[in-house]
Image (cartoon, rainbow, N blue to C red; front, side, top):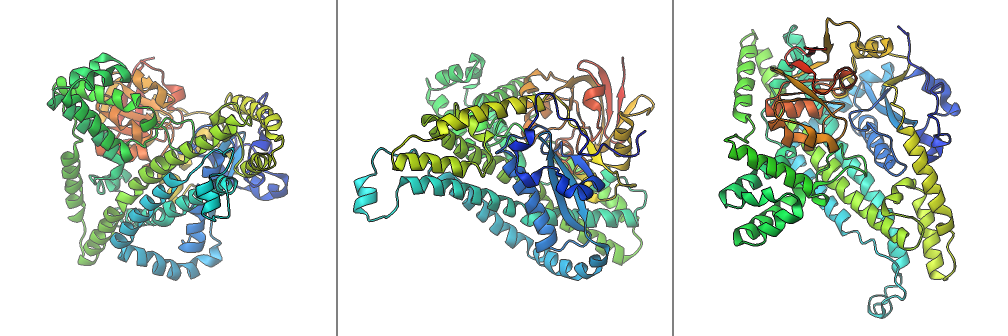
Length: 605
């Protein structure tokens, strides 16, 4: 077994991807200038959020997210032990490293953190209510951005007669600038509450470990389960529409096949038209939902690819016709939650401990909805709008010959686009030939070729010097990185664990069945009833398949990953953070998933 992971400076470039560094900002890649620091750190590939190669513009949201996370730790809240998370891109993949606060500063930060965090916890409902207004207003600002092609002649009424003083060229340049500003503001909003939400859970988690030394992590997590959150609303809307189709007598329209044929049948009756109107009401905002993590422009958005929600609705209709129950087992989850709480309450022997336990558990439950809800409002709804606005800008560049197709815009770095806009604007203002049509198509084609080459090589799970013991709570609970997983990576595989693959006991229960190994949302329609889903990770938008599968196994993610939380709420056994499940299990192979003990057993060869 190796004693460290490869240095980021020794990782070879995939064949054909030479020069990949040009695709990203100079500060986001490993460099000789910072080699001493970068080579001494432990970097892990963030497969929970960014499992794929980043295109140049998509890297914008990666950089905005991680910088905003760190800003709240170090500058807003002064989280005592944590200065945030540093980030780099290597061969197109995102790598992170937790940065601890200096030991000498931790004591002095405690009082200030308690003051700042305490204000939020004491006023959580009021501040969270204001956050909901802010985030919806921000989405409205994004939606209202006007990104329009430059006219042949400015409007007399709007520009000349009004005395406005500026024209369409200014508006276009300003609109992109505002899009960037609002995107960064979005990520500032994202972390206003998230770090505090995790801090409250970690405080509760640590207290439970202190007073109940043998308590399983899963029992702690189950005590905050059964909370209704907006992240489940898109799936709930699908179920509502399936029930409406059945109850209003239009469900047979979904046997027509594709969306166009189904809608043609629906539009032929009043009940069908009423159903379409109801679908449209659900679509905004709930179907601004990505089939992936929400961080890639290539992810499919339900509202833009309506075949996705239509297929899910058709499956739900079939389940209803077969006598199935679409409801999440929320009452059973809550009953189990309350049983566990009462069981552990009885073990406490002092009023002081009982009061502390109830207070910390109550705060964890109060903050928990935000821990999941932000995912819909930021990564899905807001990002959906951002991708649409960027494509509109891409269409303008296509019209002027700068790009071949609208999605080519994502192969420009965010700070290159102002230069391209200036080129377009100056040529429109003069008018004179722009350089862009001769400059950008070849550059984009070369970058596409490089990205394709980068995708041919799987990223290393980690780089640099591993910690002796992984103790940083976010790293363990969100990303699923533990001392055991680090040792398994160093050893090159899962090792000998008695025929079982080990991971996090993420959601209780035991299930057996044939595995279905998938690597992207495009393969979801391959899943058959009763199969066990095995994937690198799952996305919140995969919830509609949970009524079909028997259990979930993922390569990445810890106890507080989305896969773990969603499976607990849907009553499905789950083992997360296995590291090697997708490379160790094949489709059709029978496996046993023990979500209570965190093991996956291969039942046949």
